[in-house]
Length: 145
Image 1 (cartoon, one colour):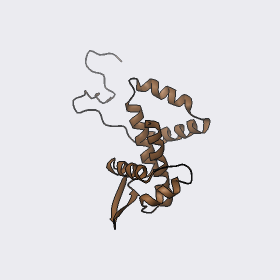
Image 2 (image 1 turned 90 degrees about the vertical axis):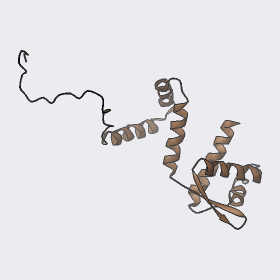
Image 3 (image 1 turned 135 degrees about the vertical axis):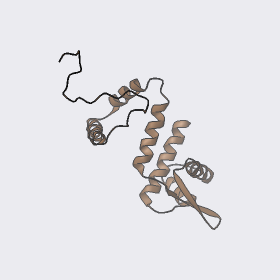
Image 4 (image 1 turned 120 degrees about the vertical axis):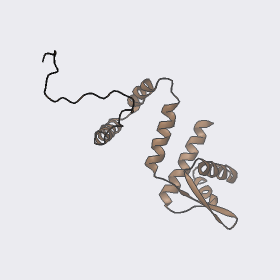
């Protein structure tokens, strides 16, 4: 059931991004019904849930709401991956298994992303951590080089 709900959320978000305009429950429903049987109340509930999660904003249009995405597909995907990773008791092992599931193209995209991420400085050390002394080239008294 949880997987089906996640798949339905993804299917709805995909449509909202593709249409790139505010959409109603009925529009999403009619499009989904071309692929599967689904009730109006199910689509309405999922759109409301996505709104409460902060992925969609909505605006009243008469008696209905119009929904539109708050952020990009990439940000949504990253948040889903982070949520899934956070549920693991062993995040390193989860990543190893995840990498094993990747296609060669996905692994290359990961390498590219890691190269881009390396361009950005890492977080500074905590204020209370010891900082290494700068090397001035001088030898301290009693020390050998």
